[in-house]
Image 1 (cartoon, rainbow, N blue to C red):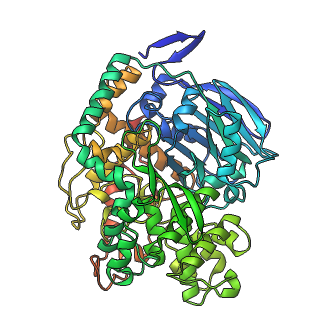
Image 2: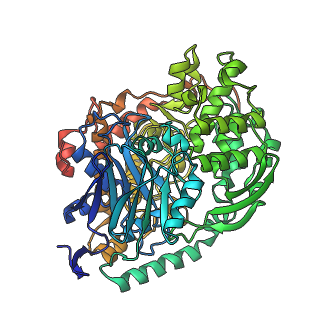
Image 3: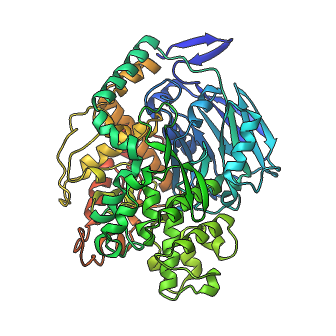
Length: 629
């Protein structure tokens, strides 16, 4: 039985606040809801708690941009307890981009601050008649007018809110989200983005410009001494594995930019090209992690981060000076090889413009590549776009980012993502829209890592490289967040059959990370070794085994699939664009001649986790997991 504390005349659960805040924007009312212990035990926090709430409250038929969609901002169990790399947040809603379950994981410092302000999550329903922001300070809350900042970019909005609470944190949107463009992001900490699933558009549709939080009342752990000791041991192991951490500290995710553009990982020329021949070694070197690192002025880490894989940079570009967050790999791919650009000035400025506007860098680059190919094939003309565009034109790329940020004219159409834009444009443009079920594809190619096809096609959030799975382990061994008997299982890259079980284990582990606030990069420094079991005991007072953690992960994943079934989406009917899986295959390069048998990969995985032919989790798996169907 979970133990409680009496503090400030309130009943407070160990480790978490034990309550969430509901905000009805339509009638400006609030409700606090206490969450039962067994719900936390079954779903944890993060998007585990999110999928429990949304499945309970939503039929699945809601318009994603209508008043009945629920937008949730979720903290994690590890938030505010000093757990290294345990400071992330999740944002959840029905996705307007895919019509499925939508979530986006985000760094920065907002998550722990919201938890310290008194709530484990905030849920918005309805639509405000006027622009507002939500303010929460130590358990007290109000909706305030955002009329003065409606129309401002993300940086300007964060500046405004931080002046109100200088010690607080702000979660904000820019103009693209106000205009409900599906490639918009939700931003915090001047460049940390919740960019996927089109959730910026959901926040904009509700006319919520931001959430401002400040908190000073941390949740009490069950055993503070045990927690302190466990965190120390995590840091000791980090120091022992410092060589694993070093590339992240020096270059962040850009350490893989140069090799990725050459080994078949980074998609080239809208997924139709080959890095070695169409981009080339010299161009890859121009945008390498070493080159990007020259602009760094200091390291950056999100809340509770000891890895500090981020960096603040300063660069005088030919487009003007910039000072902000260092490029990430997804930005180097989307603004680099995908568009045949090796101009680091243009790449850096495009990244900065997206952060300032609140645009998803992956989708922005994907839309630009789609537009470039439509121009190359004569589907879009200079008259349509307003200026000359094309692959390998850095100046045109910068102008396209600026136009996407305004969301006017044809750029309002393109700002809905490549798939929806192609439906509007027609003329055969559909075959150049590289997406899965409406989600623009990330910068990792399944032709090099075949099980990424399983993740892109069969996860409840389609087209997402961070959704869990063994793609990045192929050619090596299974890496899980915590010690488990299957850890270290060797995985042959191009053996297709027999991967369903280890794919599912990797997915379950990812659900646990996302439901606690843990950064996914933790597995790079603490592979198969993070002490989740001890942390749950120290923070929550729970005795859990690795098998129980896997069961929780499975429950969350199956619940997300159930949400999609209720929304009318059969995961077994989702299919890829041909270029994604090598149909037709590339003629040369590291992945030349390869076509991925995604049918077998997806079929084995869905059978393993218990998804029926109609896309619904089977009655048996729902009963075994204690999920109401």
